Image (cartoon, rainbow, N blue to C red; front, side, top):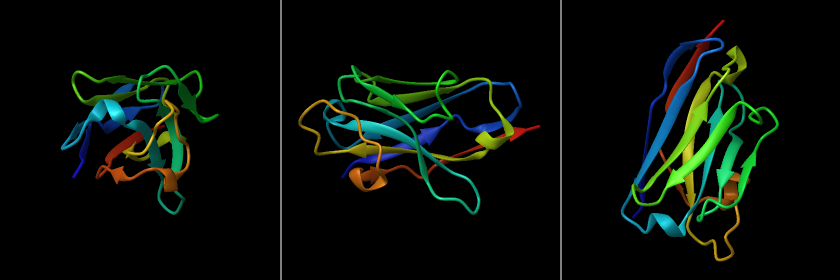
Length: 127
């Protein structure tokens, strides 16, 4: 059973930065494609960024391009999401997720393509 634990959320002023981490245990992390999603109150959970298991391929939602950076350290079983130039609209619970069936070194952007989820970490941006 894979467990994912996010950390690094908090309260930050608009324009500030945060670094989210997601530590994985219970499986072979280097086999998983990983993704970060977020969910604001009253809204659906949406993809923010995704990364292939070998970190060669990355994806960013339009809202994240140029401001957020996804990365991973397979030796540490951890995926990161660097959040820069934060805006009020970035306020949400951020979740990491793992895809356990990737065989081609791709990234995935759909919720249904992920098998394991963390509990989420709150990011609040004050205006």
